[in-house]
Image 1 (cartoon, rainbow, N blue to C red):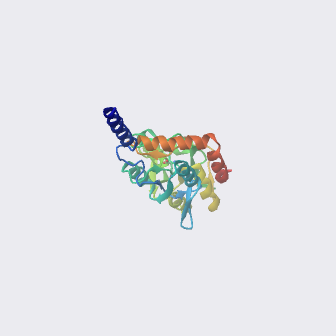
Image 2 (image 1 turned 90 degrees about the vertical axis):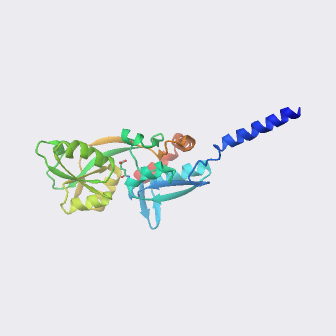
Length: 254
Ligand code: GLN
């Protein structure tokens, strides 16, 4: 009887240790969900005073609430988000981030929660009237993009590497748009929602009707943290199923 009790006690201790993942924490900081983002991407994330607001900030807040964690948002260069998730400094990367095969080698992605479209912004009087104009023989346009975004990747492969034009990379989408206004670039390739926001804020610009690429947005999580991926993805799936995500999208996109 006594032997049995000791055995059970040992088993219970082993199990409770295993439940804590051998003492490893699920998030970088106990009780906190750290979201890495780049608040230059309205309406998904942008600054309002000192606060990062937008679709992703609200989705992350809802995920954190479901998991009983406190949300902390860290604003950084878009280029640093994946590495900070990889290094375990941030728990989730939420930044209107497109799922790509290349990024899947670096991080895991949750279920997708929104669709993005790469569009082309030009000046109202531009000679560029369709996406195909960018790929025409001898086109030789200068294309403005935000560094390390899919707009950068695709135009680098399809246009620059193909010898059809040049890509100018900016840290912020808004800076690429300023370069378009001042005539330094011939167009900007960027996601449709920030494109709409930038065009609304700047006179004399328009978005071409033809789309460059259609893609899925998801949250990035460290590849080796299965527990966190399951927790974040589970919460996100519930928020999609009960209509919360759609409500947040509608609030900003309408
Ligand atoms: N969807 C694009 C990408 O993932 C742009 C994201 C962004 O600039 N925040 O590369």
